[in-house]
Amino acid sequence: MMSNLHVANLELAGAAALDFSAWALAKQARIEQVLGLVLPPENSAPHKLHSAMRYSALGGGKRVRALLCYAASELCETEMSVADAIAGAVELIHAYSLVHDDMPCMDDDDLRRGKPSCHKQYDDATALLVGDALQSLAFEMLAQPDLCAEAAHQISMLNMLAKASGSTGMAGGQAIDLDSVGKMLTQTELETMHHLKTGALIKAAVLLGAVASSAEKITALRIYASNIGLAFQVIDDILDVEADTSILGKTAGKDADSNKPTFVSLLGLQPAKQYAQQLYENAISALAPFGDSALRLRELAGFITQRNF
Ligand code: GRG
Image (cartoon, rainbow, N blue to C red; front, side):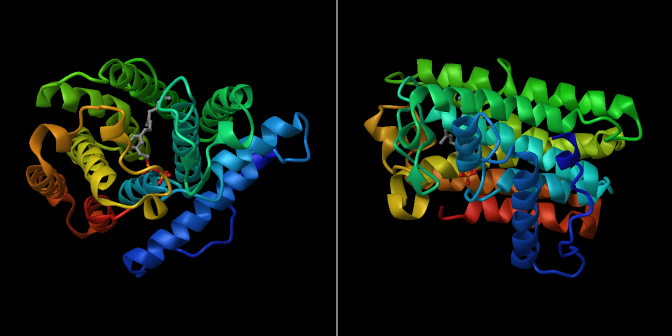
């Protein structure tokens, strides 16, 4: 199993001189291959669990978090083997969160990434275990021996991912979200919830590859990540109102049906769009000190705020 974690020698396209869509396609293919190697094979026991893990983590999703990991790692000149481990770990945590979020005890959704959600395709108990096992695999990936030349950097990364996904990060945000159904939240409360639920992992995706960087660089990246994390959620709320289920690959109109507070219900559709634009501009401003070397992060901010799925 451990040998599968060494994926640095993948023969995939380099990034130099590629336009954004070619760069993103290459990186999406790369993360698919990284995850395909790290996830246990379906023909290994326990078969159902391994099959359901691969079903949930492979072959779908925009891979925005992995793209952010690769873009920030390129900016910080982080080794590709480390970037792969970071991107894989973050995507595994994200996949686990989606599997659990879709379960009847949470958001209760039958559709994810254009196919039946894990608990519909398999069963509730398997979905619970898939989330658990994907989370453990994420930490196994990031904890692989000798991943980083400096052990202290690796420990910092593990610490950062644990905090981003735990009760003062994503899981905490989900707890507030579940508790907010049917309530009116202020904009500050809504922002706090989403900084945790969606923003914490997006911030980790940007900052994990920067652990060895200067304090100034990390501060600028933190501002960038905080703004795109929130922008991601504002756009998610807008798409829930404006986009079709067939394009989203998940059930549209879910927020209103579940009586959830959103940026659209709080601000209105047009002001929510202006707010997303403001967050985008804040993120771009934070990248100014990096000049051309932050091109991919700039393009990703554009992708996140202009996406239609
Ligand atoms: C269960 C601990 C736990 C947490 C769940 C992130 C989350 C917390 C739930 C997802 C619910 C949701 C739809 C949130 C809105 C923002 C979001 C994370 C959307 C899904 O992310 P995308 O659009 O998904 O990046 P893909 O499929 O493209 O990877």
